[in-house]
Image (tube, rainbow, N blue to C red):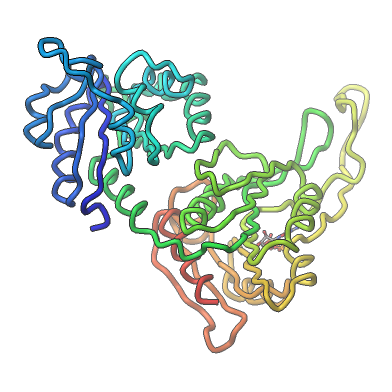
Amino acid sequence: MNLKGKHIILGITGGIAAYKSATLIRLLVKAGAEVQVVATAAALEFIRPVTLSALTGKPVISEFFTANTGEWHSHVDIGLWADAMVIAPATACTLAKMATGVADNMLVTTYLSAKAPVFVAPAMDLDMMAHPTTTRNLAMLAADGVHVIEPASGELASHLVGRGRMEEPEKIVEVLDAFFGKGKTMQGKRILLTAGPTIERIDPVRYIGNFSSGKMGYAIAEEAARRGAEVILVSGPTSLSVSHPGITKVDVESGREMYEACLKHFPQCDIAIMAAAVADYTPAEPRDKKIKREHEDVESIRLVKNPDIAAALGREKTSEQKLIGFALETDSAIDNGREKLSRKNLDAIVVNSLADAGAGFGTDTNKISIISADPSQDITTYPLKSKDAVAADILDYIETL
Ligand code: CTP
């Protein structure tokens, strides 16, 4: 319902998923949006322009000029007209052109002129999707502020099974709807957020780490930024990137580095959310040369405790600041959560249990409970949801604090 009256440029590129464009247009138009298709020449090999123009009520734009009339299509005007530009399917070729600014067709030229937010829904075979070039191009686009609607895994047109299938039109419309629907309810707030694992060096080639993927923390960062917050994301090593310009990412490696970054930024923040899986211990004497099996008989490594970041912020926090922790437990989740809530002086703690299917590290879903330090609120439990939806629940909760 947030798409009503919105002007959407639908960029279509030459992949088999272009056949889904008809459904996508249908859904956008049904939601009240006006759609202008800008298609590459290759896209029109997969889907006929008459299908597209019949659904949008507007001629398809593909070339800079209409050949027989000589009419010029202004990429600048179309770019300014749009409230959002969506490129679906986005092939590896178009993503590469967008990442590097190769404006050799109407679609990429329009992208370069568009002032509106841009979304891409990649679609390609799994090997192309997994290629470092594609990963690099997507990371560059994300850094430029392009929203990447991640492809799904499943059977591909090649009959191979893997990641690369364009997200379903229903889901793409949902993403756009949510984008336009979000109120800027966290405008003016500055949020410090930790995410991912920390890694603790043993020697130059080995470390102590954990299975945290960072997905939950990154989902919170994106959602908070969409709500207008300024987010400082202090992240341990992950394979994730951020797309919203409201997020400033501070990369750290060890728990000690994360601690120092957090202490530096916390005084300027209104809210701190501790979603990182910080290593509790670190090698007491990390070696600067590789430990050799033959020459040294290492049977144990002496460890020392890392600083507890959440507890340190709990001691520093003023009455104006809110501090939210996480507890991932294997057993007695709620009891352990309560204990950490009070020991670290948190305002609330998000508890999840590895005992729940679909919760925990690496998954795209999570199942949480939130315990409040305010005894009148106590505990709120939520069903299993996508990490994006869980991020929204957590921020809705924090907004009530
Ligand atoms: N945390 C932190 N710094 C640490 C350890 C934990 O900031 N050195 C934060 C986590 O980000 C999380 C909360 O504290 O928000 C709870 O983390 P957890 O590892 O469960 O707590 P621990 O006190 O380390 O307890 P456990 O013995 O279960 O590991």
